[in-house]
Image (cartoon, rainbow, N blue to C red; front, top):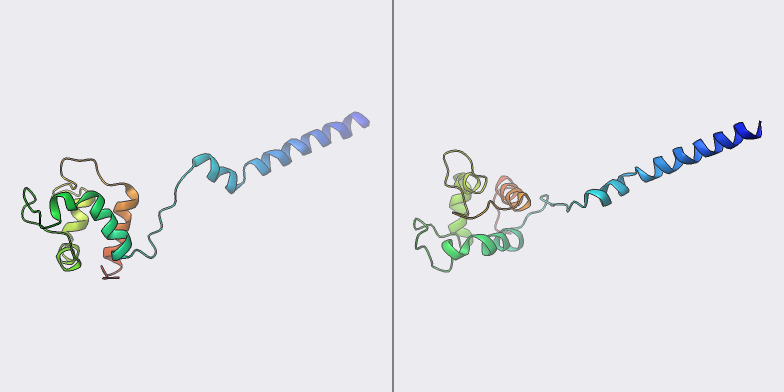
Length: 126
């Protein structure tokens, strides 16, 4: 009888430990994923930061050499490319578009998702 109670207690303890260790919080710690918030993307902070880090060396500061004459610096310059789907096509490397940044690795999924979200949210000057 005591042996049976001991086995039940041991199995219950193992089950409890397994359930606790498989919590969502533990899973998030194991995957070490960084969240990418695309719910409130802003031109002034999110989009310009992406462009400064990845695009302005060819498409900014008045520099359009080797960039097909495309200037992305400044809201009005970028807006026309956002409105005609070229911006999304280029950064997502969609078929029929020139993959950007040209000759460099594709932007991070988070940066691409922020650009796409910003365009889909109306490409606001916010």
